[in-house]
Image (cartoon, rainbow, N blue to C red; front, side, top):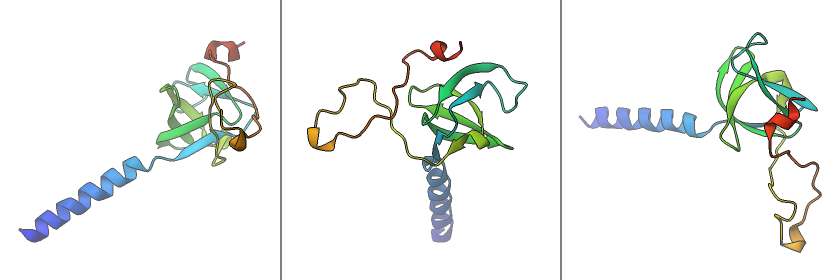
Length: 117
């Protein structure tokens, strides 16, 4: 009985740990297409710019299913992302501690539709 409990606890920790440790990546090319499925034949949903952070949820061959900081989901080819750390700020004055201000590389447009042009 004790061995069964230990085994089940091991399984719970093993599987929940792998789910909780989702990979975080960012777009590594100037502009990347986000698709509705894992392949170039799937619909283009929107485009994202370099350094856009993504959380990988699933893989299918060379494609990653992800969720972004706004909760949107899509598919991106693995050659378009890297482990480069990135963050998103929604306001230009989001950092108010003058001693910790970093150079802003770019600002993300608030509407994804503006990137489809």
